[in-house]
Figure 1: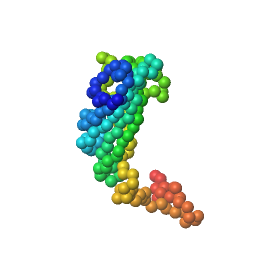
Figure 2 (figure 1 turned 90 degrees about the horizontal axis):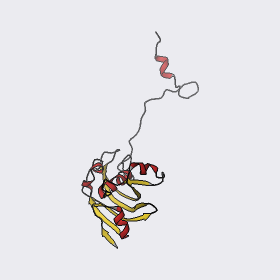
Figure 3 (figure 1 turned 180 degrees about the vertical axis):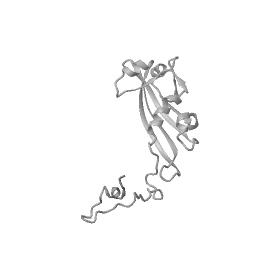
Figure 4 (figure 1 turned 45 degrees about the horizontal axis):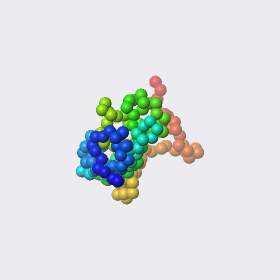
Length: 172
């Protein structure tokens, strides 16, 4: 059964229920993510489940949203659909998080043993954004012609002389 996800929750209690949860959160609620987007008009959709595994609660689910960013090639706005899956292990202290194997992604509970849904999803959403946002298949956005100046050729063998510019310098 799918239930509406609470904005703040105790993962241990949700794990006992064994339900799936879903939510749609306005992008404007994600403060760090909003700084990297041109528009925060959309929503981030998520669905997840919480299970007990050995000594920890594990939150496993997916998120999706449309990121409107500025192309770093043509400086125009463009939208990129973002989807990601996540699996997070709940821990109570940073020391527990550090002790987990590298392949596990920890999330540290607050002082009340709870998680805020926005905080839980924001880090994974940030990791999905492209490092250098740019159009992928837009023919109107192509890299410009690159020019690096004239290269002097050595007339003796037709190859560029890497020290050709030094001959014009006079030593004093």
